[in-house]
Length: 438
Ligand SMILES: [Fe+2]
Image (cartoon, rainbow, N blue to C red):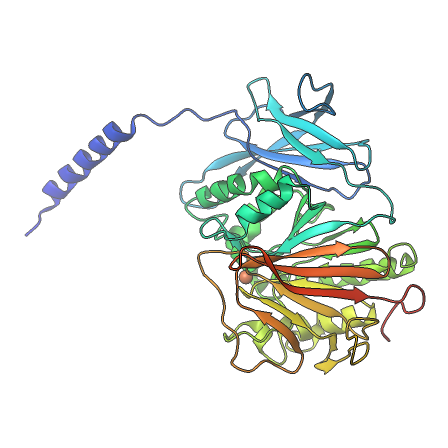
């Protein structure tokens, strides 16, 4: 029989020995970590975000020369973030926006303060206006464990293959896990990519804990919705990021569904007024409207919530996106890659039999959630659906090249096949003419 006293003694001894082994805890650090970039939506600007463990000033020093002094300085602000876990760990999140950057020019920078500086990173300022050809890496569902796509994404980034990254929800698994420590590890892991390219995000279901607070605090997206929904222009495209999660976590506020929907409608109206300048309208949201995976996720239901809205009739997104002629819809959540034929309400609307993606009569959906995480890959149903064009159950990510106002190139990279391109299509929209499908 075990009495209370020996157990208590054992605990004390264990604690004593573990402290002996580990030594005393390190003092909190003023050195920047988890450095990443984002584009705040204002031409010629870039925001640098990082973390420290003590409150210190927020400064970025930058310049054009790879070595030597960094002649420019920008200051910003920091805000404390307390994770919702039992330890209530406190991070200081620093944000500094650089302005007046020369389009397409490479900059070198470091961030921090006199109490500690980061190493030097490089980034290229985004070009201005609609007449250039942005290249993007697109994926969702990247975890701190099993992040299969990351080594190749790092290599691609070092080779200057992209102008920005779109991470379509589900980070780290999870940002809040282990009192936010998994989030810290993940943000360090993506630093070689995210400190060199604007890393643009939308929330996924894995960010849900404590009302998405880790997601909202750790990233700095355009607008004033803490990254839940926003839009930005990139070359010939208008890119809209939104939260599918407002449809599922209603306890954080049913009003968010309505607010986001009205914002989406007014943003789509403006995007259409500007369509002669930026012809492509691209959306990114985490949970797809359609998918042919063998699970019970929302997208496997005929009347999915994202597609048809709450109770099958309120604030559904398919009608809205179809009405305003969204060209391309990027999704994740399913840990696989799936390309659909142009579709509206289960009707395949190919441009023609021979060239389905040339002048498609409905939006093109890409589901790209196979970047790698501890939950492994998601299987597909045995037989594909008639609206499913290609399914790939391999780790990988998507390359999106917005060549000009009429041509977009989409490729799927397989990490299981050492970088082999396993999907390769062009989407072509008419130069003038159609604004909306209706
Ligand atoms: Fe997800």
